[in-house]
Image 1 (cartoon, rainbow, N blue to C red):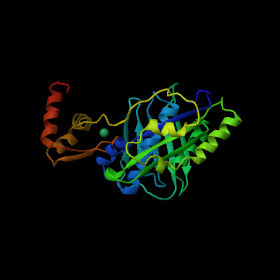
Image 2 (cartoon, rainbow, N blue to C red; image 1 turned 60 degrees about the vertical axis):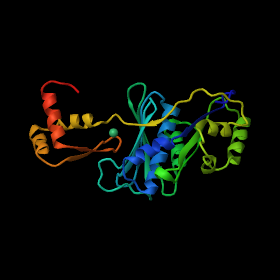
Image 3 (tube, rainbow, N blue to C red; image 1 turned 90 degrees about the vertical axis):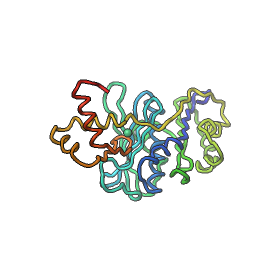
Length: 277
Ligand SMILES: [Zn+2]
């Protein structure tokens, strides 16, 4: 934040986190980059609006196919291609950006903005902030292709605060206009969020208020998957136990599990004997 209270900047580099999501599910090169950007946008939304709550972002095509990103307050992030849909989300064409989180009063906040064909994630996020959060901001974020589906993904949001004067807004506007494109700013080895902030706020006296680390993660496990299966009717479980190995996909992170019928039988027997794993 600038010491005059005019601007707040949130910067994120989420390369390893995005690679974690791309490593466990198939995605085309282009969709992989969009998912990496959506995961970065989810962190920016959470940190800007609701740092202590989970933010979920959907990037949806016209048919309802979607990329989904969850950003959790403990720094855990998940990203998923097309949950529950056989055909993949369209990489091009018109989309919408849908943002949801639980507000402090317990109500569900949901904001939706259009992303016309050709608009990028930065533009969509800026539009969301303005229309749904009444936050005036400048957003720059991008993902670059490379090993693991993404060489680097990151970006920043500059939030205009009520203390800003016309003079300092003009100075910031000019400075941001002179900065290189975000793709260039992310080039180089080990670019960090702190380095992005240093560039964005270079001409302005500022102080760091907080920093936190990100990690790809989900709460799923074979035990959780099997616990979910045991909620099905008994005859369905019986036929699973008599059948082939089960392929089950975690609906939150996209990880594929193969459950052996013998493991499922043992797990059911253990549970029915009263033992809680
Ligand atoms: Zn999972």
